[in-house]
Image (cartoon, rainbow, N blue to C red; front, top):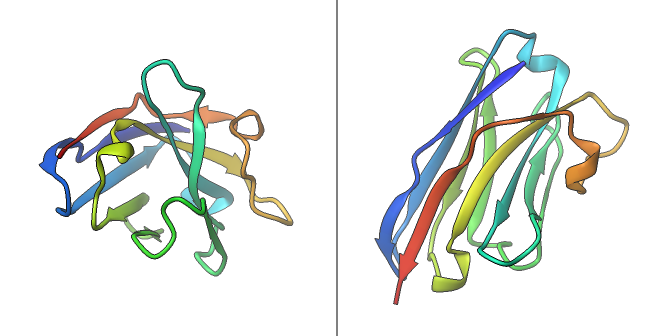
Length: 124
C-alpha cells in the first residue's frame, strides 16, 4: 500500500491543522493506521493510532485531548485533527500502516508502510 500525507503547514500556537493521509494500492480497511512525528535531532515518536474499523484508538499522552485520529474507509483516508497546537508539536508528521492486529501498534518498528511525511511548524 502507498501512503501520501498532506495538510502540514506553518501556524501559530493555539491554532489548528488537519493532516490527511491517502492510501492506494491496497485494501485500506485491512490496515490499522498510525501517525508518528519526528523533530530535528529526535527519534520518531508515536502520536496516535486507529484500528482498521475505527473502533479503537490510542494517543500519546502529549497530544491527548488536543489531537483526534479518524478514518474514512470509503475514501481510503486517515486524518489527524490537531487543535491547540504548541511549539513543541513542530515536527515532520508521518502516517503509517500495518495489517490488522489484535491490539493497536504503538511502535514505529511495528509498521510496514510509511508515507513521505508532512512538515508541521508551530510558532510561538
